[in-house]
Image (cartoon, rainbow, N blue to C red; front, side, top):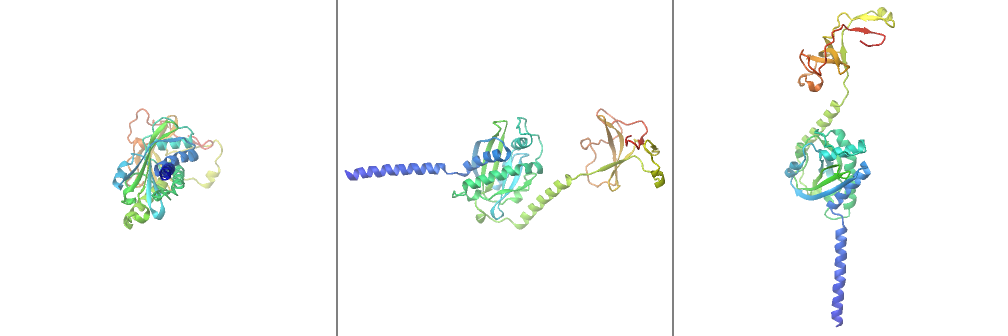
Length: 341
């Protein structure tokens, strides 16, 4: 009898211990739960934005499958982890647009994202939230076994398109965390996915030095192009040039009119600060403002650039139509007192 009661008691105690262990296991943060919470907290702390993860999947896939999943015009952020391991986060256009709206205006609108490629400025605005989410994941999973693959990653760089990613990432299995998110209670929705090598760096096959060098060279080229194309460029419109003595210049007075005999609004030289003539054009007006209508590209400009078009504020030809710069018929006289024509 005593043995029977003892057996029943042992079974009950065993059941209680099993339930406690199950609850403890359920409370442990896995990568899915950690990523869900990390995105929401980082959006709240870094961007002051309400972000809800409506659906999340954890998949395992090859590099080729990963590259096929990237959304068109999504922001591609390269992550760097322990021992130079690399991963990637891709943010869908609508989600990126909503995060930028939250940072710039404080209001996330329902308007769809513009059909443009993400820029380096967009990536810089995303970097804080990305690093915040990665730090949250690391804090949640650092005590969890079998999750070392998700630790130690931070934002490293930005890619303009998906093609260099195939050279940059190792051809190994990847853990993919695909989160469908809702911003500002449904104002904008879309996907954020993060892909990291499924194993720690010690278990990954090394990338050939020449392949990694080629990928880094491409990233450097993109960085350099972004900086160069964003630099300021000053052009000067020249009506005419004349030679005067210093004595003549010193005799200038307020209200004096200096005739420009060879000047013509039909032929304006557009020059760089080094004095090289780049284009010829006509002086006129466009929407009430002074404008130069470019008519001819000169040899002083760099070869290989695309021909002039309406898209870059110039349109070749001598005909006029609605919306184009009209020709000015009056002769040009420079008023030296006011600097106006």
